[in-house]
Length: 75
Length: 164
View 1: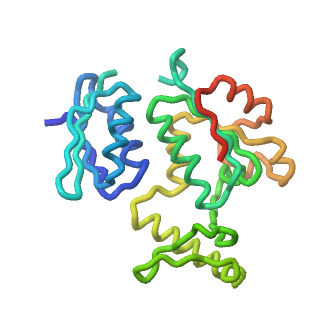
View 2: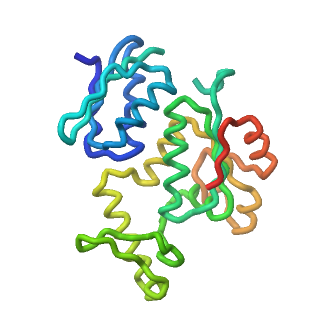
View 3: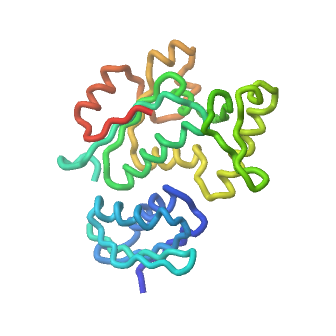
């Protein structure tokens, strides 16, 4: 189970990223944030976000029209 | 992260103040800040109006051949002749705002607030303030006043410089 869950369903670019960034602040270092989204652009964007910020994208899943990301806060 | 020696920096010149053109600078600024960049926005000419306390942003259908609104299950363009009809721009603005809401796109007010929260630095062009007779009271709290040299100094230290 993730330490925090962010429901970003129905939100469009760049809101899932902006809300994830905010939510990560409340996750302890080493902890995880699960993000639920429906924006297909979020798939590439969370990869880029994690590469740039140095956080780990542990999982990126698509189930129908819903996407799930699991991010580990590294710093 | 901001302020660290290795922090990447981004600057942008924001020159346009219509509803559609307000999106790229605020989307990029908030996203870059979320990705750990130190961001500066320089608001000049019509872009300066994006710093007004009360935003009443509009779109213009005039001279915008690429603008196609999804209506009646198709995409409808806006020829310049139609733009001249009173009420067309207001209707197009309402339509755009409805689409923004329906598609879960943030409002400009929301993105601006998020940019301020994320410590995006904002510079209001002093010359434009004088030119269009705005006072500091017309503008939101936070932006500093500055000119071209203030922007250039920031740009020389930035990894990304955009003109929008």
